[in-house]
Image (cartoon, rainbow, N blue to C red; front, top):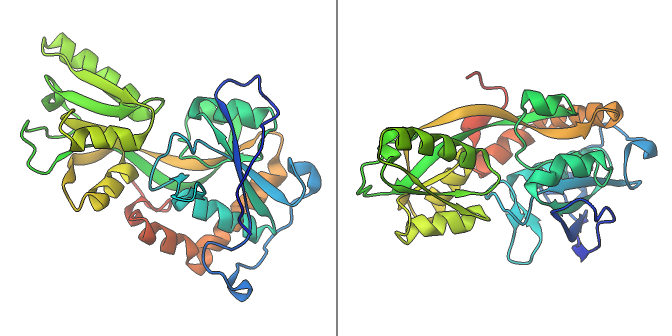
Length: 291
């Protein structure tokens, strides 16, 4: 049953943790009928959870990374990763509670036991694997998007960006990539203006309004914006920097890690996973694909 409530996150010392969370559990993402809910495949001991009977999930909801996670018009968590997480929890016989956390504070919040897992487009990087365990569930890449007529002739993540203005979102890999490209452009004497926004929606709107020449974002974001703008915003060149994304769990919580892995295997086995990817336009990012 999914409901929404406001609560204060106790660990206030962690900068960037929002005080809003959402309780979910009233309907499985796949269907409303109880008979259509996924079969429970594993149980999780009370000691493995912050709250008994609930999977508490850290997600950077306020930053918003549609179509993966965001708040909908009713201020409820929505998106591909939200649907995936709700279904995983249902397979474990659990409700879901979402804790809205600044992206940079996701892992510290998990380590402080303010949530059980992170499901928030978190890339599986070696430095992160040193401090948390992952259950991989999708590939993700980066891309450059421009207006359909592409007046500046931008060809993708390359020197064709130089001399232009690009919008990106603070705290993302895309931001880091643009800083690297900025250095390349400056070395060539042309420069690159990198304009940073708090969320992906504002970054995309700045390109749609002509304030910036290109958008640097995650590949799902670009696919979503292409759909939302009826094809006016298009990807320039190919996606790059493909990397696996996974649900992060504390190193000392192997029981939950294994339970999530079993639930995810169930999603793949019964077709739920493929349906989710198709619904959100990410079939080419299936975790079983070989890149």
